[in-house]
Structure formats: structure tokens, C-alpha cells
Image (cartoon, rainbow, N blue to C red; front, side):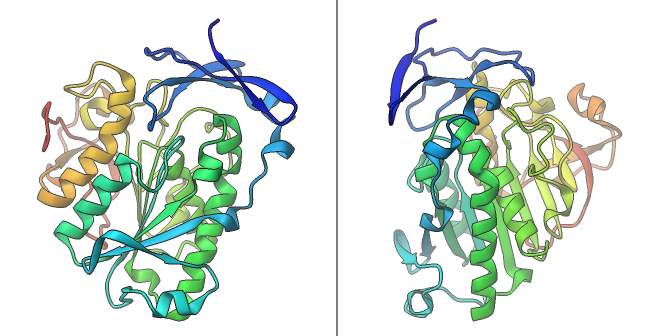
Amino acid sequence: MKCLLLLFGVIAACTASVFRDPVLGYKDGERFFHFPGYGDETMHLVNDEKLALAFNGKFTRNPANNVYWLYTRANPNTPQVLDNGNAQSVTNSNIDFSKITVFIAHGWHENGLSNTIRMLVQAFLLTNDVNVIVLDWRIIANSNYTTAKGRTAEVGRELGQFVNWLAGLGLSYNRVHLVGFCLGGHLVGNAGRETGSKVQRITALSPAGLLWDFDPNRLTPTDARYVEVIHTEITSFGYSGLCGDADFYPNGGSNMPGCWITRCSHNRSYEYMASSLKYNHLGAHECGSLSDAINNNCTGTPLNPMGNNNINKSRAGIFRINTGHNYPF
């Protein structure tokens, strides 16, 4: 088995590979599996949680070290840093609490400047005059997968505490939209839970599936007033089961048109979201069951929009939409 040996302190662990093709068929309990990185476009060999437990003390990071970057139409390209607990950093910024505030959390092996973030920030600001706050949690997110996964809930709780602090300064929970990709999907669920599920909307973009099936910290429908999930890769990288008020399975939840590898399908979730923000055109049919969604047997009422920037979405259920191969899909 070819892999890179990375030295963490005095412990050498086999954590990353340069394999270009994903290994499918992961099941909970397997010791080794592959998971995609985003910034480097490589597949990483991941050890399971049993081995990771021995290393958690070595890799512990403080979630309070997370960075919050504010983008608005007044500063769409250069962020302003908001310091948790420093009210002056907020009052001196361009934030406007009368507007909707969107919080975006990136996934594993990403950061606040990753393509996921750039695409979503641009789309949100283009279509609506909102505050966009990017959570950069790269210190933890760029650990090996099991370490990052094990710290995701704690990072999410710290984000929720940040939202609560901003609420004390004038932010309204009714105008809060939390968006997270991959591990970030579960992260924003924990953030919403930390607010007492007061935030108006959560959108989880292909939330991570590996090691999450029996984790009580995974995303749930009660984490916000409305939880929407866009499942684009349910065969290996993404969570396959129902975990929102509205669970969308575009193209059945895997093998997205125009994609030849599962990583591409996984990434389609944020591409669909960005496109929906601009065009609000991804109407979906309601399905009677998850099986119907996967097998394209959905004949329910059409045109429930997937994604978009409507803070007050409410329709619940299981939905499918068949998309095109290329943007805007």
C-alpha cells in the first residue's frame, strides 16, 4: 500500500495517499478507507476512529482560534475580521444586522479561501444584499480526517456561541442562515443546536458520511427552524440517510451528470447551491420514500426549489431533481 508517512510529533502515522481514484464501498468498522481532499485534489488514506483516539491528545486545537471573515457588498473581495468577544471589531465593520446574515463553513482539507467558499460568497452577494461571514477553521480541518471529524462538533458549538454573542449585539436569529459543506454540514448543525435551534435555516451541502452514521453529533432536523440537505454523493463520501426537514437527492444522490469520479459529485452540492442562488431554477419533485428518490420514481408536486436564498423556506419531505451536465445545470 503506497502512502505518505507524515510525522506528527514523535508519532508517525500513515494518513495520506496520492491515489487519484476513490476507493468505494466503505462500511463503518473498516480500519482504512480513502477520502478526498479538496485543496490538493488527492485521495487521502484515513485510519478509523479507534486508532485516532490514541492521537487525539496530540492533535487537540482550540476552536476559539477559529477566524471569522465578514464580506458584504461594500467589501465583496477583501474580508473584515470579526473577533469573537471584541464588540469593537463588529461595530467598526460593515455588518448590518437589519439584513440576513449567512455563515459559511468549509469542509475537510479546505480553508476560508477555497473554491467552495469563493463560489458561495460571490453567489450570495450577487443575488442578495446580505452579510456573509466565513468560518475559517483550517487549523483543525487540515488535520487527518478522523481528527478533524472528531473535532467538528466542538468547532460547531464555538460557532453557535459566536452567533449567540452577535445576537447580544443585535443580530436576529430569524435572519440567520448557516451553510456548511462536507464536515461543515455537521458543523453548522452543531452550531444551530448551540443556539437552542433558534437560527432560521441551515443548508448542509453533501454532509460527510464517513464515520457519522452512529454519531450523536451529526446533523439532525431539529438543529434549526428549517434544515435543508443536498445529497450529491451517497455511495462513499457523503451522508446517505435522511437528516433534514427537506432532503434533496439530485439525480438520485450519486453519479452527477458531467462527473466521472465521486469527488466531482460530492463537490456538485455547492455548485448546485451557487447556481440556485443566482437563478432559483432547481425545482424538485416530492418523493414517497428515499428509495423512490434514488430510483427516479418521484411523481409528487413539482417545483419545490432546491437551494436558493429564501430564509423562510418551510416545505418538508424527500425530493428529487434531475439536473443538466453543465453549469447552471
